[in-house]
Image 1 (tube, rainbow, N blue to C red):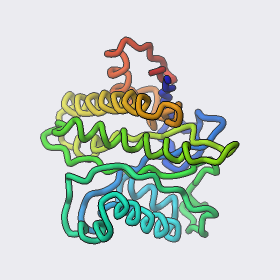
Image 2 (cartoon, rainbow, N blue to C red):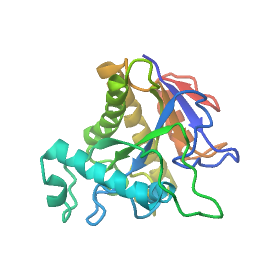
Image 3 (cartoon, one colour):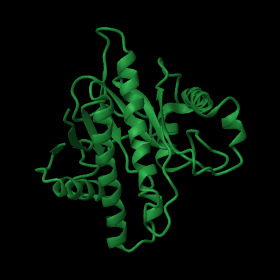
Length: 256
């Protein structure tokens, strides 16, 4: 299979809200990736600040509570009954993975932000909650682990498509973020921050290739890269990773 890697922005060429409808994918459902937390107190939960906080704001309290219960259940299903509660007091770096959690429908009433509720697109089917590693000195320490987090994310969405009833809408797009490249690039020299983003993009493309070989029939074929235009760290990093593979890149993205 091949992927359509799309640089996606909002109407003002800025970053799109993580739960907003796609400005690229006209048909089909979208799953959107959250940069989750391994920190005590918010371990494998939605909330706090940054991207994780954007999801909490967009979903509102009621839906966030529902999603968080589902995350704890998914964690226990993966690692054993009672594991989520047992792991709350530690910052485990050996259990970094991705879970697909459906967006609750209908959404409970949400408080207005700026005069209106945060947008949650009708075609946003679910959240992919992915926990990235702590980055030390601007370098991804365990490259296999980082790649596998994305493989897990892709295959989690593929599993949803595989289980969809005949004729049901499939998840056609996955909106990705670059895990651990924001918080852990703060204070780095610009060249080092760019190198961290480039390494992450390269590993993400490797994950896409691996997932296609594992379950190419059900992995979403459109990958949405949330960015701002005309240029940003995401566009620069993915463009470099693509050109290393001999791929042609334009303002809309590229085909992998």
